[in-house]
Image 1 (cartoon, rainbow, N blue to C red):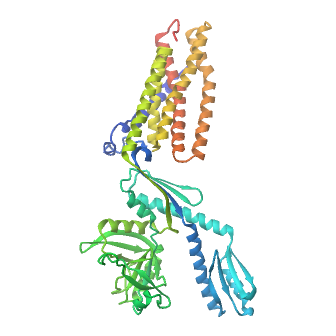
Image 2: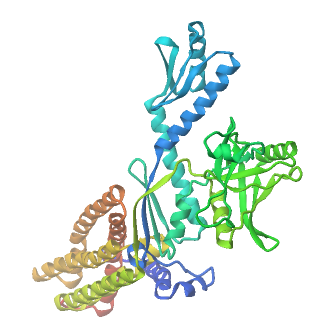
Image 3: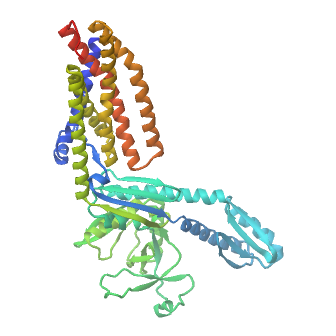
Length: 525
């Protein structure tokens, strides 16, 4: 056990030096760390929401809207298919979670039922008396559509937040239809909230130039048209201009591949670009409607309705609307990130001030320093020179813990600080086991070499067993826990691994080196 090859000693020392280099950036500021050359370690431990302040939001995905939108799509498809087949129908619409239609001609009911079944393989079609047909999505289809909406919303929320440059956001699914968003260091949570909350569903419609706005506002819009609010920053307060647009979607924002804020004659605008299919569609629309107005609708509001002066064949265009620079940047961000499949509702919102985070850090650091000092004093008093060796291993263990968290870019939370303080106590536990076994061997009359060799050998099994059981507990906490529990589990797990390394290798290396140089005739421990 006391045979320590030279290559092993070099490897242990090399690991300690690398750990020191990786942990060093944590003692300088973020700006200083960013200014370091790229070949030097510059990663720092990221502070969590509770330590540096920020915003915490719990969002709920309106999955019912996804189902409703799918049913509305089925209604349009039913209408088209029945018209193509020249089947007369009545009372086509949505009833709860099903699409219903009445076919008055009994001889056409079977054909209509066959057409409806072909529309969606995940739907069932039931016929009732009087030619009443009911198309219902299966439970599995509904569940898959809802889960897909939540996953898509999660990805789009992540994209939108990443576009703002927020460092180390925590975005994760919670429950069936909820998304937990934690944004450390965010100083403008209202802007982030506005960006997250917008569905950002963009569509292009032709303006109904022949419609009478007064009749439309009175509830009598022309067939196939609807009234929408028009964004006009010159309008007086309390007045919201309206415009009549055709319901038919000429092209949707799903074909957008890029959107960027730019300037036109000194005014902020948003330029956009379609993919190949969207560009062709956009070119056809503008070619066939020169002289007409094209309404750009974002979340059921017309943000711009420019005249089509000439065909636009390049697959790109601009959005004007009297934006300021920030609004143009946010709109471009929303269009790039994509539209949410369903609206999001903020169920819970908390803002943690940086002052509270600073107090938490100071309290945690104070607790860690006091705990470490007391442990260092106890080890020296209890084990003398062996206690000094254990203290060196403890300091190296703390450095390795910081290095590992920096390398993994782990987020340090307040429970994580508690895990570090706990690790400090556990780190010396292994050394205590070793030293107590050595003390027992000395009392039984063994020589120093034999006592130390036996102490390390007997303690190894206990050290591995005890640390592995704690490591498994930390693993389960991380897998089944969330938020603060995971933060505690991460620091505890890393601390267990580093403490096992320092106890089994570093402490043994220092004891063996001391034993070879001092060659004591008796041990005082």
